[in-house]
Image (tube, rainbow, N blue to C red; front, side, top):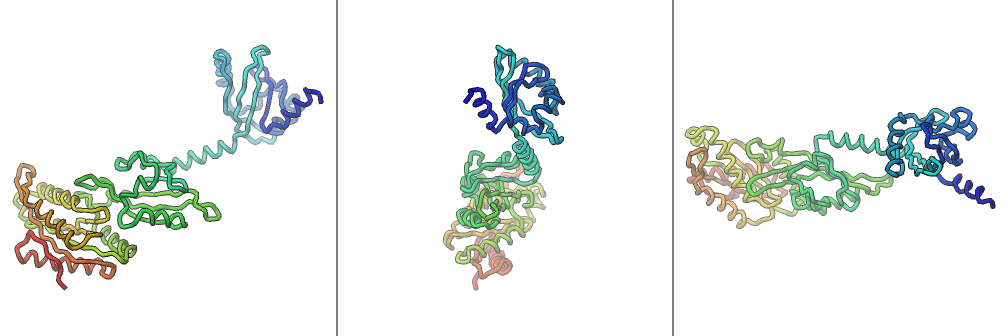
Length: 396
């Protein structure tokens, strides 16, 4: 076989446009393979008759910037690498990736052109999707099928209580999930379920993050999990503005859901009431009263284990749900709080000692929140009647 014929056959079977063009303002075509003509929709004769082989006449975009760049590339002895749009014979416009190497001896370019319209379309859709995800007022984190994080929207990237070094969902939230096992959550989502759960992030004395999360499977048509997306709503925005503790409604929801999921577990519900809080407000003013509430909240945070829950129930009342501990451990926790109350606080120049009355009742999945609260409240009433600043358990 003649080498030139063989060479042409090879070029015509390459699935990209291959051209040899003059280095002139029109990139005049000296040679183009068959695939280029199929790509553009014109025959070689039509290109010659209609455009006098001027490749630039097929370009939709302004070529002036490209021409300037070409001269710079030649002076630097660099190859060309551009993306621009061409118009087919049928009027369709498509994107191409153009790479070219300069033939200095003949002042021509060896050019390769690939159709990247589909890639450009995907890039556009990806950019548009990312715009939407960044516009959502929630944190979005997406993982692959193994739970390895592959994407975070801007709110998740800028979240100051997230461990930004975390590589997996488990590293990011595993130790912060409330009332549920992370492994159970991930196992359920692997099997196609959308799971909701709360996560809480804390410093030593305060809550710095509290989220309501949904972990959503993103599946193929045959229900095979491809990705998992966590959508997180910041509950601190909806919590008590002074203490950042959950509200009563949030507490009741957690109480109900915990015992639905953990039917064989039990716990203790405590009502903590600040003794003589009205007198503090009357004597020192409401600003000091607010400081007292915040100081009490900080002390309560020190008592909480990971799954424990707390809310500010009223002006000077807090409700705590202690979980995964026995009565002796609860007594130790409350006694620790009472011991802290003996320390004098200096608030806005005022020395104040706080007292706490605490009523406690045992709870499990057979006791709803209202029943539990009434029992703890009755125990609290007995504390108030017997001298305050102590703890009592409900007696059946």
